[in-house]
Image (cartoon, rainbow, N blue to C red):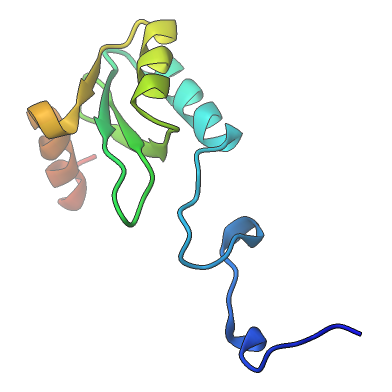
Length: 114
């Protein structure tokens, strides 16, 4: 016999069967995306965003023209190792902020100029 609670049917699971409200960790798909993205662009720099109550640590890769992508990463050390392997400089967003070219790219994209 399986015990079923009154509210069990109301509980939701996130992607990958994880309990709703829990933070998703970085996975191999995240790393693969970052690797491929960095390899296909020039002038890439990495900007590490700290873990929050809502998301795990993330890294934003920014290309020479301001194009960018964001994915989860398992921490600052993992981001530094990623940067070292690819010869990409790694910065902490909390210390230096985002590059101007990233904001300009986002603005151009909003106007449909990208």
